[in-house]
Length: 287
Image (cartoon, rainbow, N blue to C red; front, top):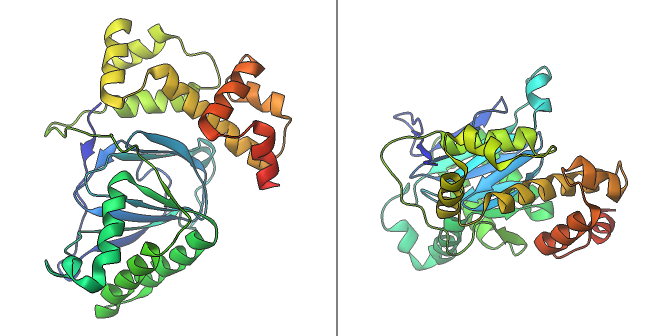
């Protein structure tokens, strides 16, 4: 259940890292790093885990992840079976809050950026017009050279800080005690669940995948995530149902079955609980 400490490569001529990810599996593991991460998704759909938050990500999303906040992006399987094109899947920027000096973040003129980075400790999502605007500024950072790259990142963060339609991702009480040793157990659990959630997953089955007996697995998962495995599985299924509802290719009842629910009333109840909307209302919102 331990996230991996990811080492971010830096060139000696740069104070922060910005790069385009050309393949969908670069962030395909549970990890953290001391750098703040700003990522803009260009291509592909999948599931994201930010702290204890689970949701679907899609092209156009912009996510700001605070330092040492565990995260994990899992692209849908279709992107691993198709021929990978030369189009970028995302642009990612990694930086420290003091990348321009210790005093910058404490200046009165930088107060809004400091507040933004405080919020980023829980993860922030931008979509729609704000996401598109910040996405363009991320591209400007990538294209700039020399000192203009630093100016472009400051401008990007400054504009991000005044966006109003943002979504805070991880819960306020989420904490993680980071170990020095690396452990891939959470990645194994997540990957197995994401590859099999459309069918029934028995507790004995997922416990065996985690290398534990059922009682120990239940205690372990609840202790480290703050939720039961059933709650986690339900969130994954509801997130997938949201994507199908937006695509608008099936009836609501058919979508409930395709998402792994065997009982429509159970699907309806859990959907309303997690999204504050009925499936029909959610579908109409995107229509």
